[in-house]
Length: 502
Image (tube, rainbow, N blue to C red; front, side, top):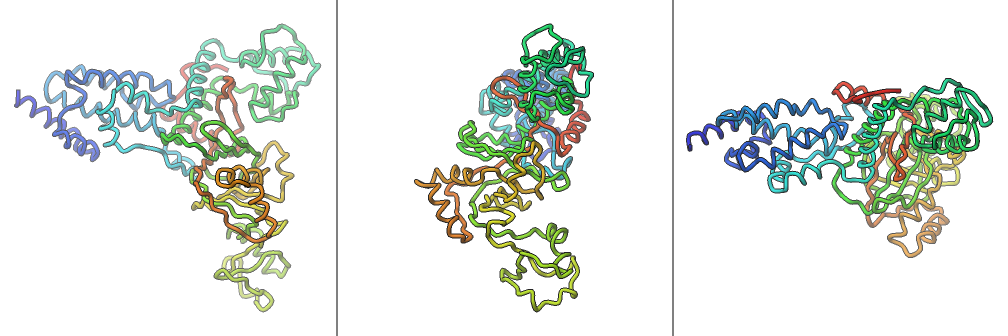
């Protein structure tokens, strides 16, 4: 018996040798098995059941080789094979746990503007935590536990059922439709909205008030101008297939996993680039929302997370070098006047005695600063979460842009429609008079740093799909084209809709 036991441990040691984390884990257990003993049945069952449901989470199930694992368990009839199966199970467990908890894509390798630090847990800690816990509960707790993630998972299954039942029906064969019109295209529009849950069944071929109301609801849920007219954008959105929506939902689930830090934040700031809004979320509920302007398509706002530390009231604008070279330095070298100050080592430089002909755009030695004032590019306040991307939230003198449906005009930073109310909301936890405190500093005209006593997590995200508590799917246009790229990456790993239909 001792000889057989020794052979099993030798098998485990050799099978785990190429994996430093597994070697450390098994070494600390004297290379004893964790999956293949008679007493390990609950662990085996919990793992196999979780792998069987990997597809529910939109994961690439093939990479967990459940058939190979079952075969290895069945073949584990001698000490050597038991050791091999044990390490195989540990590897598959770690791969699945990593994927379902923190995401199976490495988005930064796919899209340069994604800098999301995924919450991948330490393999050694995963193994030891699993052994110390109820195995079924441990596996169930690995995916995001948020209501939003669970709603997405239910929507995914609903879309799969819809596909098996024929999808949304025939596409709308019209460039546009308006209230009062009749005909086959109106019937197609009505039928698709019925299938999507926006209308009760009806047989009329008229674009009546009920259909108009359904179109408005659909437009609101898809980030479109809610005018009740089925124009080109609305027709395109209505004609999206079940498979299109399924892909959006699967990507949304993956994005939830990227933020699955396991913490319950009493307050966080959530900027969704695709719907041009900034939200404050307190204990899972939206407590403040304002419209936003994001980076233009050629100056895209990156995705990342950080912590807001302070705000600057009456800010100066220190012009980023790339913007200065593109928009300001050529004019300065040509002798045109400018409202910007020349700065060197933090001091304002008198330009009157400088021979600009000595410099080129590339060799221009000065920084550019716009002092505080009513026309400052940052407006009256900026909100800082210091990061290597030089991205922050701020006021803007160009508030007219907030009235547009698509608001992608900045050089990358986030402009807010209601920055003062945002500031009051952030200060209310540390001030008895947040409005008075802010307005007193603003009236002084002095550039003033106001620190937040409690730093606030900030997520800059790109969510093109989510499910509201009423069960309706919300979608937003893929304004930067990131979904198209990520969808190709997911499909290359075998994540495709079981049955797709238009």
